[in-house]
Length: 151
Image (cartoon, rainbow, N blue to C red; front, top):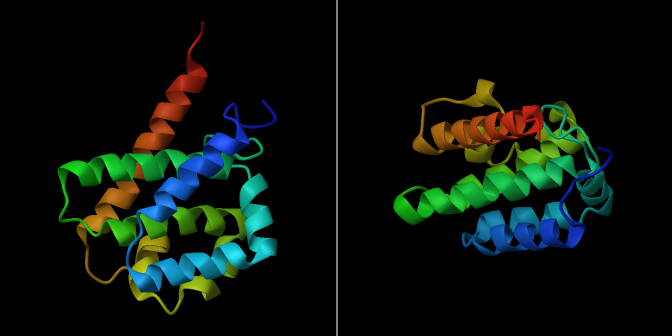
């Protein structure tokens, strides 16, 4: 497969839905700045997810999928910091599209986000760290099992 089986319009709609659920002004502003950087945004749109979606728009598909999972979890556990979790999920896509070391400069002034995206920075475990890690794992496992199915 050379590109996502999902329509690009659908994936972008999912991304907009995820972005619209981020309410904290500091995270909204960070997301806005990242999306306004055309070079980063273009790389993000076409990036392959090397773990389970090794095709064009793979990272975008993963962000749409994991963001949707996070919103479902939030419906049942409204005390989690959904703004932090959704911001980290979106930014993980940009991090993976442009490279971990290069992207760090974009989040270093947000230690709570850097802790989620860069495990070595974690000072004290938080529920959002656990949820981020597990949502990514769930998504990868489901995607790998999907690709191993024989029809």
